[in-house]
Length: 358
Ligand SMILES: *[C@@H]1O[C@H](CO)[C@@H](O)[C@H](O)[C@H]1NC(C)=O
Ligand SMILES: *[C@@H]1O[C@H](CO)[C@@H](O)[C@H](O)[C@H]1NC(C)=O
Ligand SMILES: *[C@@H]1O[C@H](CO)[C@@H](O)[C@H](O)[C@H]1NC(C)=O
Ligand SMILES: *[C@@H]1O[C@H](CO)[C@@H](O)[C@H](O)[C@H]1NC(C)=O
Image (cartoon, rainbow, N blue to C red; front, side, top):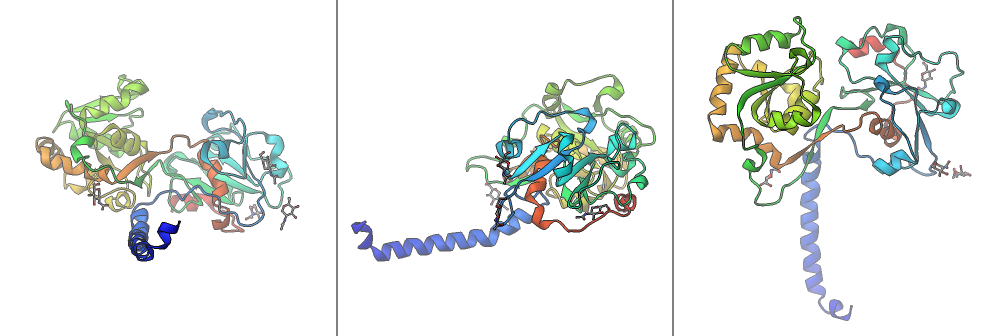
């Protein structure tokens, strides 16, 4: 201590340097963080007296039931004061009740309209599907207070994936992110092959220009899940073709398959601008970038043969890590508790159908 006191100027200088560094970080940080849309932090923003928020999952999406031992939100995600349950007897005290859309529209489940709905209770409509696959939502007009959806304007934005800024250690180069053995030009895994999908038309044209390795149930060439990413890593390009085209509908076909597999995504989905709100502009190739599918095919052939240019599509990996929703059954419900103060209230979706299709 005594030593420190006698070097007041040194301390002052060190402080100044620290402050300057910290200041410049502060200036850069927000712009780094806000570059791409991603879910907000998971820290609790409830001020003052802390009471528990009860989130009730009325039934599990697609029957994927989860075991909720202990204080799940806190233990798994560090979210305190948040009780997640699928025990329907908690209905009278639940603050939020979540209903997954699929089971409602196919009649497997119903809204508990026969139960007295507590005044403070808020109902959440949940879907990860595009409007093309969400059925008729008109019967649900005026029932839901909030939406949990992949779209950015949902009350609870639940993207299929997002990027977190990071800085790799010095010494890492772009090449470290490119899988070494590339043996296929373009690959596609498709489980649902429908003639009316735009993607089917594009594929049929593309395969006349370049070889496309197709896997999946649709072509009786199923990939066991442990083989998926290793297979994709051998492909220069992966066809991240969405089954339908809607704003923000950018699914695991991009995040899990292409990005995590180490192939450059060729995307078919919403316009390029929509992708650029989520991912760097030089991380993907958009089908619409070309005036014809033939031109796209020729471009892919050339790019695969140009090592240096191909590498530019991986540069962003030096600055961002790919995050995917590893558990969208449990994490998003827990995250409700982190957004309490930002929710518009009261709120009712008087016309959920129009909101969904807008
Ligand atoms: C905080 O919560 C406790 C337990 O629910 C209650 O007894 C207490 O009055 C509350 N305090 C304030 C300031 O609201
Ligand atoms: C909140 O829930 C936890 C875990 O179940 C419990 O230990 C705690 O007493 C609860 N707090 C309040 C204020 O009800
Ligand atoms: C991206 O990461 C590289 C390597 O760590 C670094 O040199 C570069 O400044 C970073 N770019 C941005 C925009 O942060
Ligand atoms: C939630 O929706 C119901 C049904 O429309 C409505 O009566 C209630 O006031 C809403 N609650 C909030 C907090 O918005």
